[in-house]
Amino acid sequence: MSDPVAGDQLRAFVERIERLEEEKKVISDDIKDVYAEAKGNGFDVKILRKVVSLRKKQPHEREEEEAILDLYLQALGMGPGVGM
Image (cartoon, rainbow, N blue to C red; front, side):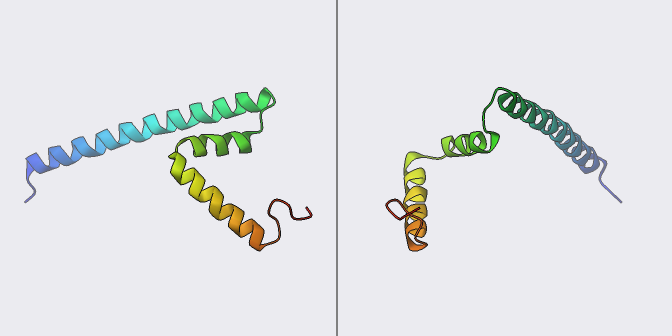
């Protein structure tokens, strides 16, 4: 036999998750609308997404990624100062 209290608790969790999933969808749609608006105003959405991603990181994380990227580009002959 199932415990009615556990069933009620489980139902409450599921309903909360469903509400949050719906809120997440609404927020995701809002974000898409902002990117579309930015694009309509001449901004490059791909670069804008990159800027948003970079702003989420700590300065030392960005510096480390940039250093590794530079190292890889140089190894491929694509770094600064290479005849590009």
